[in-house]
Length: 525
Image (cartoon, rainbow, N blue to C red; front, side):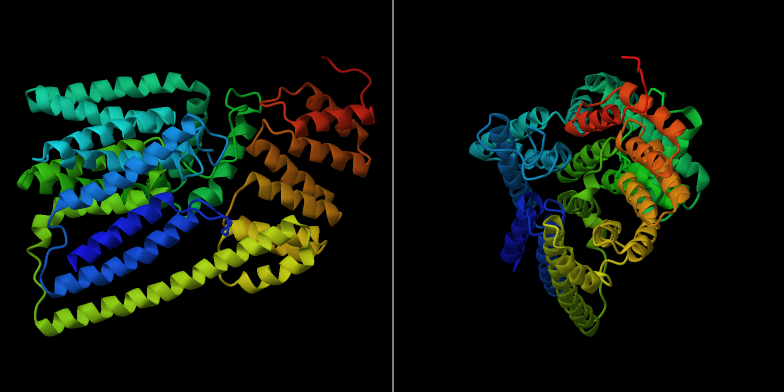
């Protein structure tokens, strides 16, 4: 049974790192979660059976660590081959591995890197050599991905390790570690200054969200539901000429997991999180072992990465974190006694039934995701009449999913069913403050001849992302439509003089159309 557990864990790691499928609307994250959850549910059944027999599931951490390192090594090699051009990447970035961006790629490698120590300290010299090789390849891949979060995470763990080994005195060790990590973060800021400034804007607006619900937060999913409104309010107050205006984008992540906890759960939630971290450190100090020290480095690596990115979007990070917690708390978990055999049998039966129920629900969700993708493909082919029945049948499964509701409203709009489109779009707005949604609502109201509402939503989209041209062009077309030539002329001048972040084909076409209309006689070049 232990061997089966190892096999299932290997399958879960492979699924959570490598699986992607274009049969899903989100080809890179949702398939990983579906595959990982499917295997983990079976692992839970095995773990319950072992607990029933009073057997430990973490008997040999070298095997668990070897599985993780092997998967991460293959992923790292895949990324390096992308860098040299032997494999294509899955996005505009050069190195992404089997993810859609370098963040997911680097997050998984950083989470798995500390497990290399299990191989490095092994008695067999060939396993030690393999550990050093795997670690070197993983570090190289992280740096080639140009993920600053990954670089900072790797170097921070190395600093902590070296200070712990060579610097004597706990106070000096901590002071030196914190100072060097601080300098490292400052240095990484200048590596991609514009991108870093963009994150500073996100954190600044995110802290405004925290101020409005300091203690208990706004609730789960509140960042997507409210953040872009705060960004729009920021530019309304400070103007579109603000230094952040060219850096502002349509944001879906806070790029800081701790800020995300504050926004969702407030100071109470962050305090509980820090309390859990303190409890894990206490577990280590009560019985410090090499295995527990590695677990601390795993949590440190993920914790540092979490300051600048969103590693917990990916299932592999959750798996590794849970395993590290299990390693630290193993001594206390062994002390837990489950009463009689009858009680253990009931708990095992409940676990098995729950797992089967979970498998059924997961299967239903997977099928729904695939049906949604089929509907999306039909919509892209302009087969709106064929796509609509799919959306109608799936509405009850995705009633609180803003991405589904946005697509649903867009299909209604293309089918010219504006009343239904408006109803779904406004429902979507309860869960999602988004630049594209504001534009869609503006389009719907314009088609309904409600020009005042259309103007408000186009203006909202423009404040959300001041560097974008499309909201201003839609406003320009709206003013032309209602005969307000004065405002249309003002916007024409703005569109022709506005600096472009990227001089795309869309921007060139917008400027061409504005010049063609000839609403202004002369424009400063």
